[in-house]
Image (cartoon, rainbow over all chains, first blue to last red; front, side, top):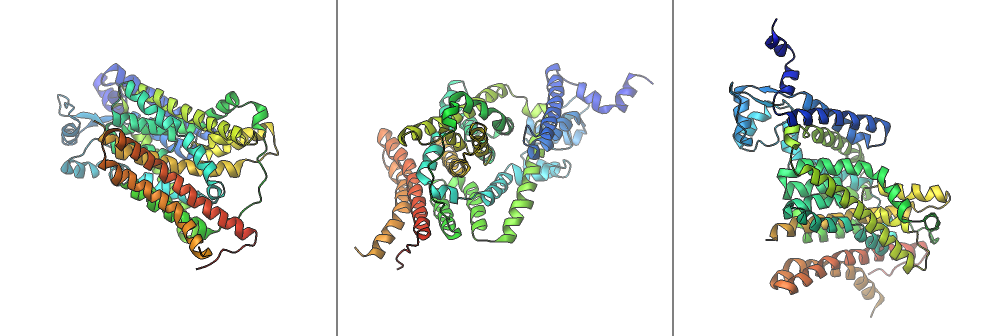
Length: 422
Length: 75
């Protein structure tokens, strides 16, 4: 038995070790990173529903690289422009070929790669993002927003600071307008919005941008408490909200709001109407009391979409797909966007603190970063640590829900206006 | 003004402001150029959330009145 026989027995190791050193290192690094995501997902530090399928997908797609047969290699090569090897083969996986676009080639790949049908028919057109948004809509209680609309909208607008400020920073650092808008959306802390914007504006970078976004969204739960403690002294965190009689908003009132807000926003941003429809149809189904639909969207659709979103994001992290010189820049810009949004929300909280005669708890501001309901829960947790009997969750949830609406508005602005900038 | 007409106007005010915002962004703004266009479009973008918040506040007031036992006039 010689070396080539051993190489034939362990084909995975042979194909992994084939190619440039940088690519081999990237593959090994991504396998390790996948393991880290699974570990922290299991421990609950990162969102397990997303991170466990994503981590597993990331590790296994990079371990599962093989030499594709000459026919498949020719199809892949036609789309990516990469030259095939001397024996007619090329490296690839049997999971997904995200860059194949020609109809004939796509029809062929759909019969080969097992995740290609879900990627082509549900991911690359934004359907999964819309399913997740329907689920969010079903979980949202807009009554919290209707109880304090101006306060909630104001704080949510302040918490879009990162989404707005990161755009010129990204352009100054060399990204195109479309790429800058896509990475700036990370500041809105809304995964489906980032996915939708990058699919519309920067399809060549949507994989790294979406992966960066979801990785960071998982970290808001761990990072924002430090930001709150750093910017707001314990005395102010313990401020008790002014007691107001509890007002019960009827389902009809919530339904009326969903109808008017959804219709007006679709009139304003036709290009974001799939996401807007998905969000408000979720709200409408919940408030109309359609229990079978609510249960179907809340359980089957939302969890199914989240599972495949995580799995596909992981599988898309194959080294040759994600290996892009701009990834490091995107990592930096993503964290700047989230940091600035958090700071903006807290500044908004301070403005209301001063305007209300020092009666408003500024921690509520950070809930404007619309990672529903994580940031609202973070705000309540930080307040509870210094004053266990102070409840700010209802106000924080109202701000959180407004954050979804303002992020949808920012998505619409970027998707509609950025392509017009010359 | 009759209470019912006043009530209807209050209900329509928020959506109307939001629709004016939509009009500024999609039709009025593009009719101008340069700085005027930018001002009209930005004003439009601000009017939309303001109008929606106004409508939301109206719905909240309705709920408060109901909680206080004061029914709204019906047309």
